[in-house]
Length: 459
Image (cartoon, rainbow, N blue to C red; front, side, top):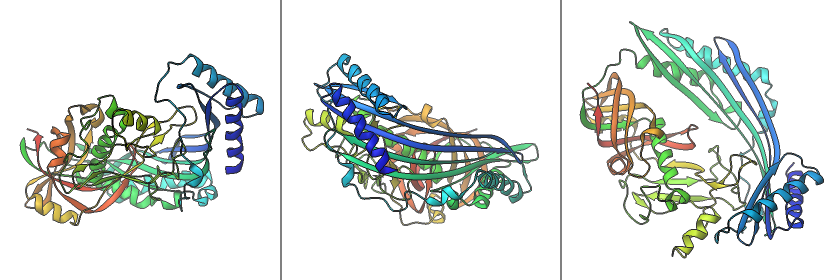
């Protein structure tokens, strides 16, 4: 399959060059994805969508053009190449627009990126897996009265890239994840809880554990009340820590920085967080669902430390932003292989791959003990709309548990946590030793975090 897609990519490049491009690049994608939603023991919806197409970028005297299509015959590729050239001819000149020089063929394969066992799972088996998740949530606790939905998602993807600068590469990957939301009820109070799991195929999903987690999270919140307003230590659940770090990762993408839309702009080398915090973009970790041997421009991928022991050490670049950074005086700026695409229909842009918060040395129980009296936050609402990306200030709704005497105590909801991202990062006093992968809002491995103090708004 890789050879076939690679040949299509090369023919698309040749077509663009024949149409008049100075340089050209072709990105071919062949993917098949499924989503199964189960409600009350029945299939609520089942979608299976496949797409196969090519996106062609070309450059003519620093003018860039893009076109895509699904007709991959010689005639179809010729039209796509011609369309890309025509858009380049009418585009505004940009001194930083030029073909990347990466070489995906030099990128080592990532073991385990493709799990062939996914092909052995029939749709019926996947439906049964989603139903088991729903049953597990109902059976885990008598107080679970409903399950909003149980969702199973997977994707098989094959990618090839070629360019007139000589780069070529191909890879295939699979992914699967599932989640459910349980509803628990007692004494006129209803609460919801989320359970989820991810892997390279359904083999990596524990239906019983996903259902149990959702039920436990919902039941634990029953009887929740608003906590009193205070400034106190706050422990962030790994899913909440992942949400914040995912947002921060977006502000460290160089295109955001160069547009002046990041609170971290111009701050390389500064201490922006507690020494307890180290965050790395790790694009070749086999456990991360966004891993690939090379990026969407064909540059071999690797690891990019972003925050090391509290110091901001790098931004994430593709070839365009690296050239722009060099022109602004950063002679050593280079692409970090963080070009990504939503698919063949889109030209690349800078994005995180897998963000990893380095685990600390303390257990979760030790974090609670160190917090003493505070709040454990298990969920936040409206984070991305509630954070100002330039100032970093935020105030978001939250649910969780009180921490009393170093132990989890009564459930709490309808409160807010408020701060600014920089202050929050500097108040991290401890990082838990156990992390988990979170597939929402990116691919992020996060442990629980202890913040020395944060404003909690309640009653």
